[in-house]
Length: 592
Picture 1 (cartoon, rainbow, N blue to C red):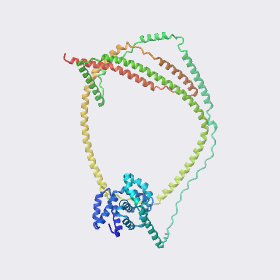
Picture 2 (picture 1 turned 90 degrees about the vertical axis):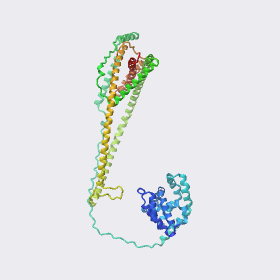
Picture 3 (picture 1 turned 120 degrees about the horizontal axis):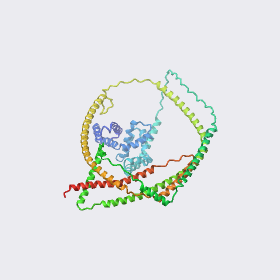
Picture 4 (picture 1 turned 135 degrees about the vertical axis):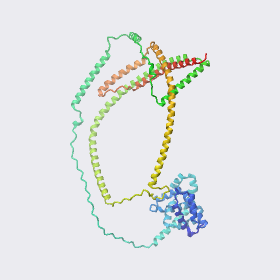
C-alpha cells in the first residue's frame, strides 16, 4: 500500500499521464512502457498502483465515459472539462478497485482531493436509483447484462451505505468550512469615461397602406350567358335528331333484300368458295445474297443457332442408322391436333373479350349516372366556397407583407452592425511552408503538387498499357466474327432453298383451305354489346359528355397472340423441310 501523504500526488500523476495518451498515434503497451520509465522514482507498490490504474482507465474507457458524460450533463454542468480525467480515475477506483483497496484506503484518496468535487461526484455516482436504472442499461449495451449485474452493479449497491457515510462526512466538512470563511471586501469597478458614439439613423419602414373596401362580386359572374344556353339546347336537339335518323337507318337497312337464314348461309358459303385465294409473291432468290451489316452479338447468336441445328440433324441421322423410326407421321398428327386446340382456344378468348367489353359498357353507364349527381352537388357548394376563399386570401396577403417588412428591418440592423466591425488584414501564404498542425503526413503545397505530377505520370503509363491490351483483344474478336460470318453465309444459302420449297407447298395448301365457323356465343355477345353501346350513347347525349373511344389495346393484344400462335405453327413445316434437306445431303455422303 502507498503512504497516506502521497495519495494526492499519485492521482495527479495518473491524470497527467491520461492527458498525454492519444489512442490514434500510440498503443496502450507503448504508453505504459513510457510511463513506467517516468515512474522509476517511486517504489514498487506505488508504481504498480499507478500503472494498474492507468491501464484500467484506458481499457474500460467506454464504460467510464457513460457515467462521466451523464455527470457533466446533469450535476456537473458548471465543472471544468479539463477535470474530466479526475472523475474517470475516481469512477474506476470505485467500480473496479474498491474491494481491493478497502473503504478506509478509498476514503483517504477521496479526502486528499478537492472536497466539493468529490462530494458532488460521489453523490451522483452512488445514487441507488441511477445504478439500478440507466447506468445498468447503458453498461448492458456494452457488456453482458448478467455479467454487469453480478460483477459491477451488485458490489456498488453493497458498498453504497458505507460510501454514503463518506459523502455525509464530506458534506459536514463543507458546511464547517463555509461558516469559517471571512467576508472579504469586493472591489467595485468604476466605469470608463468613454465618448458615446451617436447612433446611426435607421430608416423607418413605411406603414402598410390600408386596403380599400372592394365591391362585392356581381351574381352574374357565376351564371352562364344566355347565348351559351341557347346554343346548348340547339346542339342537343340536333344530336337527338341525328341519333333517331341513325337508329331508323340501322333498323331498316337492306329490308327489301332480306332472305331466309338457310339461303343466306348457302350463298355465303358459295361466295367463300368462289373468292380467289390470296396470291403470295414469289421470293426473290437474290434477296438472300444482299449484304447485311450485323453486330458482334448477332453474328455469334446466329452462328450458335446454326451449330445447334447441325448437331440435332447429325444426331437424327445417327438414330436412323441405328434403326430408329421416322417421327414425321406423328409430328403431322400432332400439328393437326394443335391446330384444332388453337381454334377452340381462340374462340374461347374471343368470348371472354366480348364479355369484358359488355361489362365495360355497363360500367360506363353507371359512371355517367354518378357524374350527373356529383355535378348537382358541386353547383350548390361552389357559391359558398368562393366568398370564404377571397377573405382568406386577403388576410394571408396582409400577414405576408408585415412579415417581409419585419425581416427587412432586422436585415438592415445586421448589415449596419457588420459594417461597424474593424476590417481584418489578409495574411500572405508561403506555398513552401507546412501548416504547422503537428501531423506526420503534413506537407507543403509545392511538395503536394510534385507528388500529384508523379501520380499522373504513373496513371498515364497504366492507361497506355491498358489501351494496348484492348487493341489486341479487339483484333482477336474481329477474327472470330469473320469466321462466324463465313459459317452463317453457308447456312443462309441452305435456308433460302428451304424457304422456296416452303412457299410452293403453302401455295398448294392455300387453295384447299376451309372456312372458320363462328361460335353462337360470339354472335350473341356481339348483339348485346351493340345494344349497350346504343344505350350509352343516348345517356352521354343527355349528360353532355363526349363518348369515349373504344379501347383498342385489348384487341391488339389478342390479335398479336393469334398472329404469334399461327406463326409458330407455320414455322414447323419449314424446319421439317430444312431437316429433310440435311438428311438427304447426309445420306448422299454416306457409303452405299
